Length: 183
Image (cartoon, rainbow, N blue to C red; front, side, top):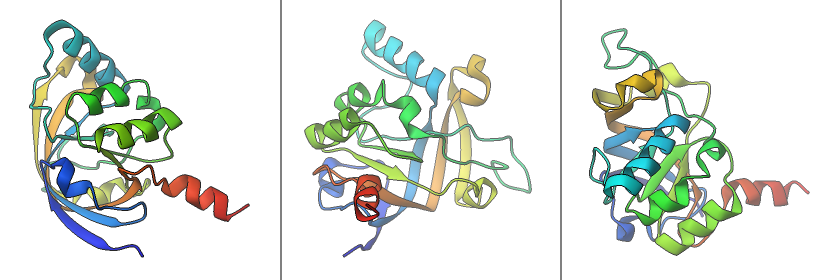
């Protein structure tokens, strides 16, 4: 039975081990935004220096390209990007210390396996409500890669940001469960 859990970031693998696909998770603390170009840059940094401009251990990535500050908030809007676009890099980033990623849509079998192998999770959030999601962001700081524009690396601070476990550490996959139930 799905449950609601509040978690403080950064995460530990122990903190996510008992989560199951379908659980609602409210996140508070720092996340890092990266999309396609950022993932390419991250893999290059890992190859060149074995590090990124932030501490990988326990970090959470949010596949998003936030808009500039608006309405008295640190961001105007911040919505999830289709996660499968980052599948090429996710297994390596999970192995390097990332514990969770947030996006929308289902992931490849390789990412599901990486969740099982590393004890990481994939969280999804609702697309199309980017202005509403921005209300759960209390701070936004540029970390690096400004030349990537909206895909620059940013650190966002979240307060009760709503997500759901889409892939758990045991390989439970919410998207595939829904597909199977509809057949």
